Amino acid sequence: MPEGGSIVAKELVKVYGGKVRAVEGVSFEVPPGEIFGFLGPNGAGKTTTVSMLSAGLRPTSGQAIVDGIEVGRDPEAVKRRIGVIFQEATADGDLSGRENLEIAAGCYGISRSESRLRAKELIDQMQLADAADRLAKTYSGGMRRRLELAVGLVHRPRILFLDEPTLGLDPQGRAGFWSFIQKLRQENGMTVFVTTHYLDEADGMCERIAIIDHGKIVILGTPTELKDKVGGDVVTIKTSSETPDVTNVLKAIPGVSSIQRKETAYRVKCANGETFVPLAVGSVTKAGVGVAGVTVKRPSLDEVFLEFTGREFREEEGPTATDRAVMMGRVRDNFARRR
Image (cartoon, rainbow, N blue to C red):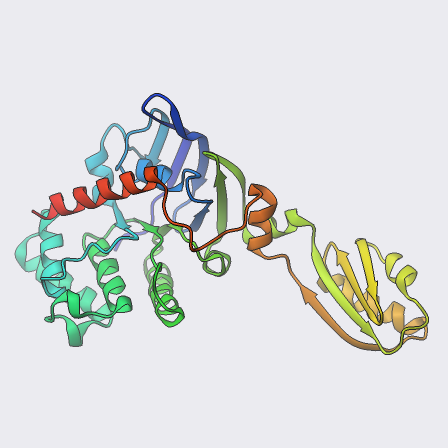
């Protein structure tokens, strides 16, 4: 497989029916080889943005440039360079895993002999050899997602779009799916653009993350940068006795923004927990008070999400009407290509 390509969004706007502004001036760049996370509440514009980037929807205005090609000018060339894994199941359950792969390869104009070779290669890579000739409807959830990932890779794309790829999988299935994605990137440098409802996935897998709300990007950066925007770390120091009170001792340490005391525990909000802890332990000890325990907690992406959207990130929320319309259009297009 070739190395990854770039993704560029320039002031993307999408208006439905002349009234509903689903996306308003979205701009960002994803360099080759990066895993880029795209998060937002339901109805925020995620699905619409991904569809414009992956040639599923035409923007009302602005530009989507994928692997150096403007999507609106040559959508078919873009589709040949990208793989898309939908949150909806798209594998044909009445075909075997091998048949799904060979038919998908044929849809991209790949010869029958080459299709067989690529199908075998991906079946082995996705650890599906024992089930390759079974009907896909007999596969477990994790196996089916690996098959759909293989289908999305059969034409050797430079960029992979993953739209809620692990939705409905158990923790083991999610971990297995992401191990395959990491392996692909290590071996081929593929660019990955992912939307997910699992913030732990975004935190652990994505090099940068953008959060969209009401059709606009509200914040973009690395997971660490996003957490830093919330206000640093929280350090809890437990002392061996209630007296003397060391609040003022801790407050004098550089980088401290607030302190709350409850009996022998001091909850300190500071710029950087790693640099604060040794200074705090030294200062408290010097004041004649023993330290019984220290914990450091980084702000989570849940707190970042709440800070910048005013909403909690609820996994159980369903798609909006706009999301469903876009999803169904993509599924129809996918099946049309296979016929």
